[in-house]
Image 1 (spheres, helix red, strand yellow):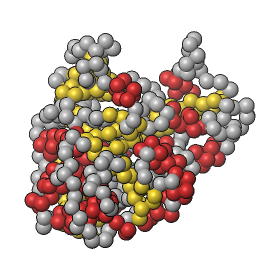
Image 2: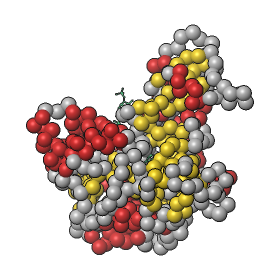
Image 3: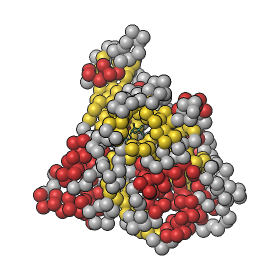
Length: 492
Ligand code: MCA
Ligand code: AMP
């Protein structure tokens, strides 16, 4: 059996998950996962890497279904609960899935896809009946999960990881951050990305610890749980720390004291998925006494670098490669750069993904000839620790910790009748890191941008919707005709 599931046998009576105000033991989790797995198999002996997308909010049921897919030999494809139907449809088509598992809440939402795609929408309740059929042996080299990530192409690519990749991603963090069975973590992150799935949920379950789900982030609820004193660990994107600080700023001095005292007791608080602004780090230290540990990762590699658990955590830096991660910083010809010189991070090791789903060319392009994964992140070594300086592509935007392709938004916008041409950029923002901003070229002298946003929301998730718009007669271009996005940023 897959190690993560096998290990659950060691912690049977311990609480694995807290979900919708109920506690679930490791035994309950394993039992439920096994019966769902058996139901998924029907008459087959194993799923043979069939892609099984599922749309379930963060909950006990989410984890049980993910484990079930793994136990039955399938590839888990978690879908994003914020995505409108076209974004979901893209994933279902790209994975060529034959079924999609839907939580009650999303069953009617997905149902129209049955006729459109010929896919079978399977309700969660229908796969929950007792079933003790034999489950297959699944080796660690097998494909386990596909997570969709935006890149320098218009449409997101499916990042395929094997069970061995996932185990490497988990174990390096469990060791580096000293996870223990008495740990208790709150998950407030979406469960279709590495940060929530691996760093929070799976590290907890590997360790015999407890993971509590809050289906969506709400600052007051998070502070209430911190105040309860039950957390030992907390992990989030910088925007969440910013929002928690704003909430703290708005409470009374007496309440502030209580919140601060409670937060100071956690053993570790981690920030990642986007650059942690030094003022946010400093304010958080002032508010809670906690020195945030910043780390760097990517869907394709899991976590790559981290500041130290016991040693130095330097503001504005991402630390050193984690154990098991090989890293080099190179120039455009893949030659190593010297200290204090900018270069690109390239990564090797067991945590690095297997391939982009059915995209052999993109996969080949993502690696150097000698097997280094090319991250596209630019950084340098500064006095013994690495820091990120930026990305090599202006078309990738990081907002609220989400990676967003400007090209995908542009392609969608161009389909609108009023839009002759457009360019999308990320503008720096204290709260969101960057905010999506669009320059529209149109013959019209006036455009109702709210209407454009509402139209976009039918096709793209809320975090990809532009927050700023400008209208122009043309886009700035260089002599080769390429839009000069860095110049465009100054027009907003
Ligand atoms: C939402 N709003 C935004 C954005 N998103 N405004 C500007 N930019 C945005 N990106 C607006 C909404 O329209 C709404 O506005 C208001 O904010 C509240 O929206 P809501 O959806 O409720 O937002 P939220 O729940 O407060 O979301 C903030 C969030 C979320 C919790 C920070 O963005 C989030 O979960 N981010 C984490 C993503 C993540 O897990 N990334 C990891 C991938 P109005 O009120 O006007 O309607 S990276 C990864 O996995 C790698 C491996 C790594 O290194 O970790
Ligand atoms: P994703 O593809 O959503 O997994 O996002 C990965 C990207 O997030 C990386 O390539 C980086 O650009 C960015 N990222 C993650 N952690 C950090 C960090 N600590 N500082 C700066 N950027 C980060």
